[in-house]
Image 1: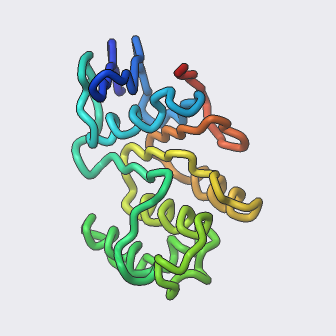
Image 2: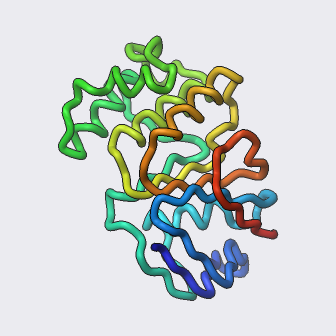
Image 3: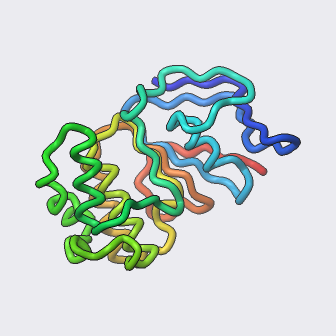
Length: 188
């Protein structure tokens, strides 16, 4: 279980996150919703270990490498979609040969040989989620995972997330079709 109390992140005079309490059960599917500027992305970065708290306490977060964040604008290395997924697999001690399987699970098999820089926003998002799921993280953090996805992409993401057995946190202003068990609201 992840527990946080009086979580605060400040950037100078700007209060980027203020959350009195946070509890996330193992295996839970939590939705975090709120308007732009409410701290959704900041909270995900804190949970991923990429942002330090200005105040408060947080415990129970998986060790580094076991929490994976898929950013709003996913990062890619040079090379193809397959190469990006294969790299993540190798980094986690898994066979790179599984890259095509993960791309297929996200309905992105047709993108395997395409350079990352030549993919649309929705295509990049599907490949990034395939890459994240391939590493089998304990905690999967998705920042606006449905942005730029068409209906087919949304369906593929939802189907892939159904079989994910770890703890899932999805942050978005509108959680739409996300299959979640509980929602917390953040306010700007």
